Length: 160
Image (cartoon, rainbow, N blue to C red; front, side):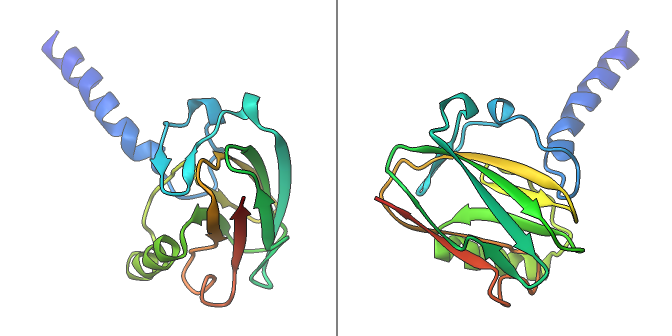
């Protein structure tokens, strides 16, 4: 009985590590994402999305489109497609947060993480981010894989 209980506890203790995997694994459904509140919004409910924005990432180290607009309170579904041959990601945040995270990624390129405001997308794959913009202002999105952000793989979101 003790061994069974220990195995059960260890299995659930390992789950958060698996949930933080940085890679090509399918993303959890938006409804299953943890509710996270940030300075640029919070986890969105896909059933409340007011629109879908398709964003393409390429090996030219660019997003298309690279400028987006939203209204304060909007929940937006981002469908993020990687048309390149290398891994790319779309991470939402303030410019300071993106720069700080990009520096951290340089020091720890294999860092594992998976937050509702991030989509890690393998070559030829598509992922989604569902996000509610709760505050007005200028926010950003970028690819924080080492070298990509510095090469100009960054975009702007204006929330009115």
